[in-house]
Image 1 (cartoon, rainbow, N blue to C red):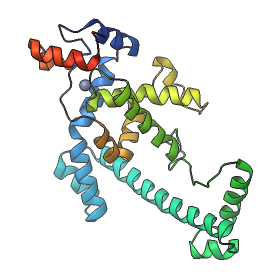
Image 2 (image 1 turned 90 degrees about the horizontal axis):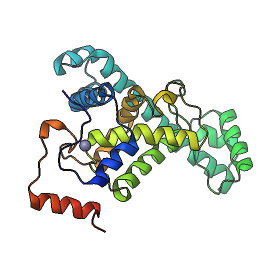
Image 3 (image 1 turned 60 degrees about the vertical axis):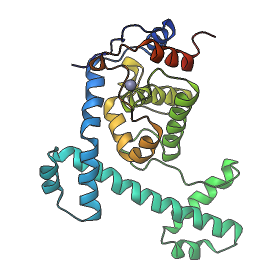
Length: 255
Ligand SMILES: [Zn+2]
């Protein structure tokens, strides 16, 4: 069973790092781990449903996954596609009106968007003080806490954590765990309304995380290490001296 114990023979700095982060409950890490174990099946089944127009229930059965999780993935991918399509249309239409002096009605017709919504976007942008217009909102206002742009900011923070934070382990599991804290902190700093349940352990919930990962699977897989987790006790991580020195050098524990 997975637990967040520390491997033996760790330098002091690593222990401090883990204590600072706050240890995750076993259930949370187990839930993330379980999702990661089936993620490739969910992605493959969703591809079959979306690209090959296969039946969702049949694909769930073929890939041995729950219908509900496949349904969630497919819904998110559809909403995201619609959102990106709208983003492209609105940004092109606003640009056409403001910089190419097109009449709003014609720009709306050309890009097949609602004329009133386009007017509202232009008014909003004119009053915003922003230098460039960017279409930005949540692509599922009912279930997602952040706007699309904010979600990309979370990924940027994750990248910074990995490159500058020098984490002990930046495997997929540890990276997704870190995202729970990044999301909570970001919501607090930017005064974004978030579910009250996040306050209990001062982090986002696994439910939010899975929805987030489903939308950004490709970007996340580019960011995170494919290594096995150094923190998993199953590895019984007992490095030989040469490995330990190599690791310690990376963490700069002797500086
Ligand atoms: Zn790890």
